[in-house]
Length: 253
Image (cartoon, rainbow, N blue to C red; front, side, top):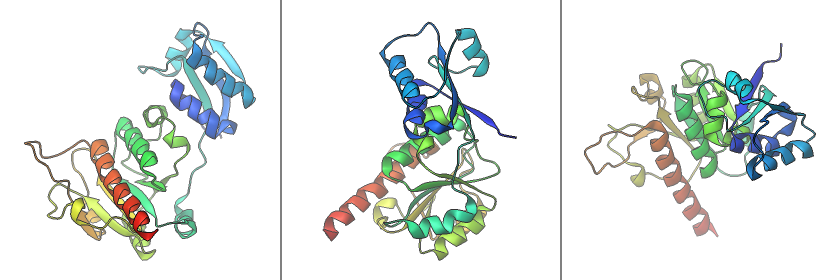
């Protein structure tokens, strides 16, 4: 049985229509909204031959309860993703050094979406999450991701420790983020094949995950706060890695 998912919000729906219009079975648009942003989404739907239904606010509110849908909802099938078995071949086929984000038990869809958005902006090749004890890639996560979920492979794996071993065997350095680490990311070379691992809300990295990392890194903190939200920490780590990788390419030229 084909599972139906819903993507909502003008930015997320617009990105989906641009990148993967074939996934959209029908676009539901608020009948009373006719501004420029809505017109742009409707034009994308028309260009992709996606059927559009103008509906009432009540119908949209019943479909996506308790969130701001901005007057537009796309009904889709499950996104075709990169499977766990295909990950080794995916890494081997990359043109440059691998750049991966691994999220160990992020359970809030808002945090997952924010991490995906940062990952896409930083040039990450794929995001890896455990199949259990992780936030679903649902409509809320997709909306927060602002289109990143439609263009960035998200790999759900059944055994994260085994996946970390496989990644290391492929020549990728695996670094975990934790506030207790003595080494900071400023002192570490992040320009080569790299996987950054960040833990979930509250508990951080699990013990077994830490044991399968090549090293543990921290963010140097200047104030009285000892920790950051996982999505904020993810962005900081990813863009330090991106800075180093850009500098490394410039030196090579």
